[in-house]
Image (cartoon, rainbow, N blue to C red; front, side, top):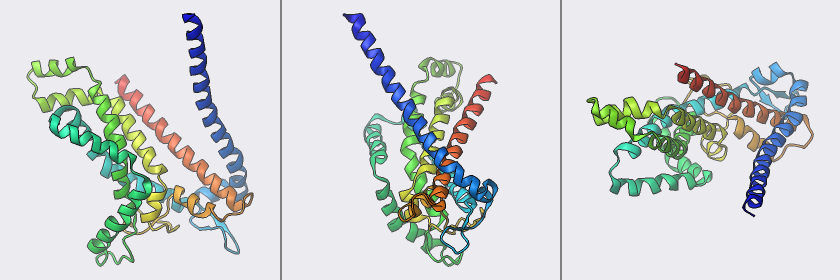
Length: 295
């Protein structure tokens, strides 16, 4: 009887795992089947390196380089602002936070993870955008505060719960014997934490960073509300100008595009580029993590 139940549960778990794999496979098939033919029709180089996105013009152009760079700039800014704060907060919560503060801080972090993206977008519109315009508008001749800086700051806040929760869990999972051994050898509490515990949790911390990047680059609604959504080629020093990301480009134009048109195919192809971009980031971090483990 017990063996029969075990076999049934193994089958249930296998079906659940198979359903997850099948879902991902179907998404991949849809993206590549629907996205590659329009990309080839437009021209892969013209599509990826073109600096003009004018799908409704008399002579339409479908260059997504401005959106690629917009995604890179905004995500990079969010990582630069959010990841150090998130990792340091995780270290504090795991090894240095007094229990009375932890009882308040942990639920607050969990609550941040449950806040809808549109609420973060409203916060950005009502707080960050006016503040940026007031502080830098005259100096940089800005038309509004809807800029890449506003989007990066907002995304930095949004990725904090992901980075903090995963990094804290992995730091706590490091065996306490490593800390005790470091202290026994004369290391201070802070030195033992930063030189022994955190390096031992490196793979988990990197996973937190990767998931934070995925959260940032895949965010749509909040970025759409504060980034300015200008499909114009920007340089890194134009951080006080508006930009459009890959995700925003899809959601802005998918509502009115004719299904089956070259415009629709270009939007699906944009999703393919975004998918490959995230996959590449995950593979890069996996390679880096393996190289560090070998060393």
